[in-house]
Length: 160
Image (cartoon, rainbow, N blue to C red; front, side, top):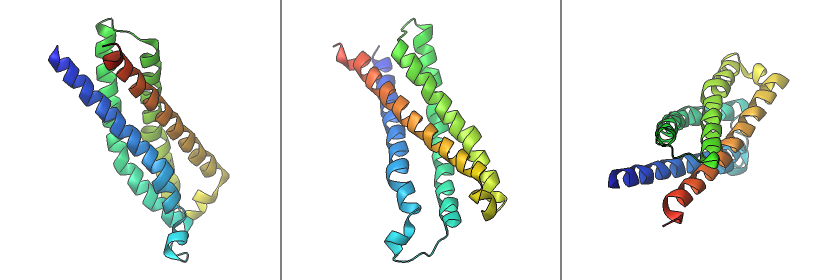
């Protein structure tokens, strides 16, 4: 079963890359983009323009997120089929897939629609609530990926 070991290594690395991307976007990229005046010395971009840049970054990241969700579904379905069931893995995998699809298929299209409607629409309370929901979803995604990685590492290498 050497091939399964390599598949698991690839899987854990992919989860780590995705977690790294999520943490990087949330902790470094977004705060920098949305406070560009601190780095440029003056306000050159409006908050709306900063949001457009951030959306462009998220659109590219959504590809990685969707690929990761698909791989999680495949890998964890295989484990389930082989009766290698773990409640922590199942819960964290389901949460990660749910959070990914909420972000890529719900929050991103909603934010794009508000941005397409113009700057004034992005100043509404509804948009603020959608944006806050996407931030909470991203935090849930980071947490569930971290738990999934830790548990998969333990199950694969912690018992040897």
